[in-house]
Image 1 (cartoon, rainbow, N blue to C red):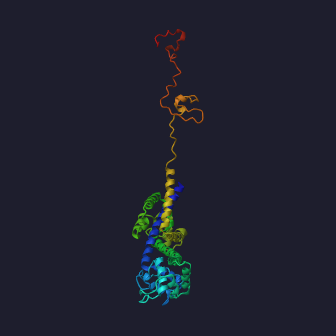
Image 2 (cartoon, rainbow, N blue to C red; image 1 turned 30 degrees about the horizontal axis):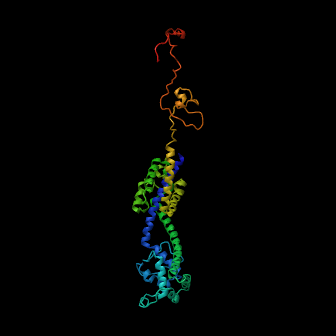
Image 3 (cartoon, rainbow, N blue to C red; image 1 turned 60 degrees about the vertical axis):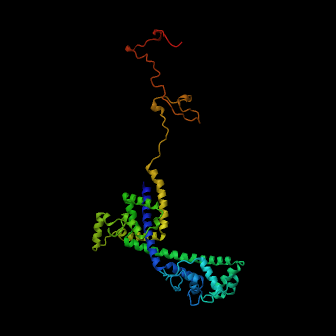
Length: 415
């Protein structure tokens, strides 16, 4: 059926999108391991929270990153990033921590307010002020930022004498700021995945239009790809595949990808009509008689579709592939197996040669005429047949039947 073919084509295309997304995500993770962009975005967001975008000497941002609770999470000495509105796509973290627990943030901020920004003999002495609401309020100027000082004072005033409640208020403020930073990072990751996906599509010549057209015209390839997709959705660890595994999976599909068949789409070079192939060969020598769709419009559009699909992420395509396979499992059986006939094996009256049942034929298993009475199946053959009405007296040689008056008297019997 037309609908099932389109569904299988959609499954095949989505499966290709899934594999390409896994490849692009693996490339992105490799870039992240080298650049540490997540740490750069976190550092930029903390500078915004602390109102210290320049991270000046003696400022709160430097004091915060130099605090032992935060410094222990870093691999190198703190070096602030550029004072820009947002980090660049390929911002480098320079050994900064990629994650800071909210509890570490609140405790570091309260400790700086109570004991000062420097870590020296005075702030580390046992006689140093203990962290309490009173000590934080009296020494809040140690923060060096009027905006942050007012925020900490507000947390103290609303804590009702409970230091733990004040700390939770500061942590909630930090978490809300990190949600905004996460939004920046996700948008940046989306753009990076787009450019990675476009590069993968061009380098490997993965054209969504070519693949869709090929699967629609080739039933064997379509069934093979759908079978591979069924195996993929049954594997719970499929999304954790490495770059090499995903690339091997893509190559094993044997779809029209790569540059071995030339440029065109949706038809590959070897699949084009002879006339079109001849025209293209002449054009390559200088003639301008080319297919505008196959050679100019379709390839960039197909690559662009692959790039956009990569930005959606592998989990999105895996979930969509699961839904398509569920739909296919309900559609295919109805196409292959027609509805079964009734299990009632009763012989129709017209087939048996017997007269139709009447309302009083209950004893012979006939269907009664009264509504609501269940049908009773025959448990033994009906003793009556088509010859039961004949006594055999007519079948006499010469064709003359004996009259009843001329028959001899009966004898014997049961007393």
